[in-house]
Length: 158
Image (cartoon, rainbow, N blue to C red; front, side, top):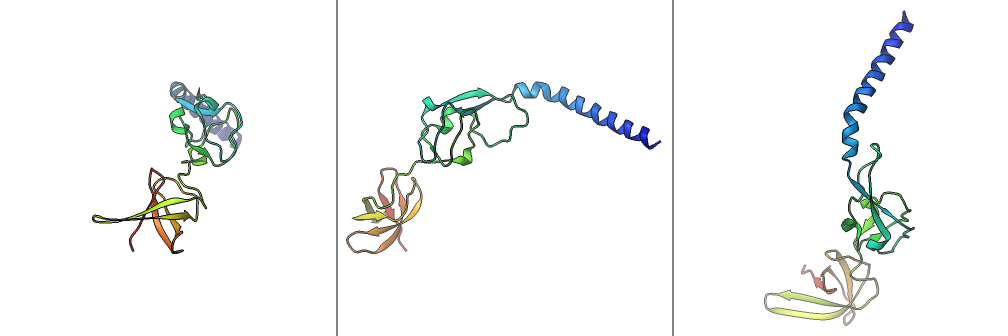
């Protein structure tokens, strides 16, 4: 009797799997696209449109979080090695650095109409919008500031 019960459970499972496959079949055709490298991209390399391509997704078990268009990855920098034919996870990309540690940058402080500027040196690499610590080269004082799009650092008042 136990044997028959197992067979009926197996039949029910197989029937359910067949029904899910029939329903998922059309959905798989509409899964969209994924971006894959055409050659190895090493950590720290900027991704150019010529080094990636969009391919149709055919694997219904593919985990999410991958880039779906070239525009999403173009100009970004890889944080890990990206292999040809493998999807590019968005978590493995970062914005390019606007300022690098040890370089010379312009510090600006603005309070109303008063604007003060000085030379500074970032203590870390940072992208646009990041708040970082910067050493004022004239006084040696370390201040916090926001990296601006033009590469200057807007000093934050305490």
